[in-house]
Length: 169
Image (cartoon, rainbow, N blue to C red; front, top):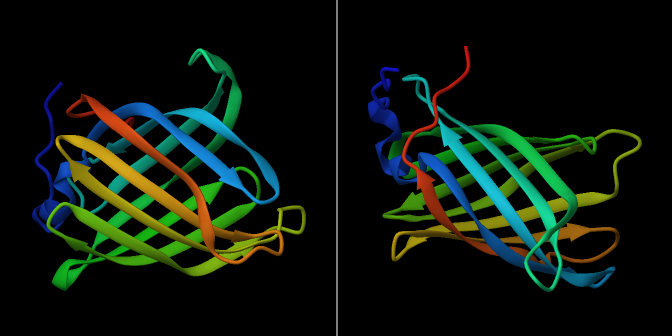
């Protein structure tokens, strides 16, 4: 399969493209702390956006998969002056729009809009940091939800396992 050329607008976030796998930790005042595994895929089809999917699963103390956790999917669009827009959708009835900035291999995003269905949990804001550190994708997510103020929720370290994942037409 021919790999499409990355759209030139995406150059500041080109380091994200590929499939990443790894593990992280999570916690929040309303839940027990936990370990999780994660796969993130950033793809592209030559147009000026990246596709994004993330899957997580609970890990036991031995690092074995216990059950699925969260899933999210969306699109990342690079704007002029290193600004970034990210639209994410969750199967739990939450949609988020993040605005942020790329500085070298560091991305900082904050929610601009959060929309929820009537059955979704109360969630009001998010803050995400992504960075390429020694070739690994490090990221952290702060969340404001269920009556709690914005605070640390999950973080992970992921290794790139594939440089390009073809888009399905």
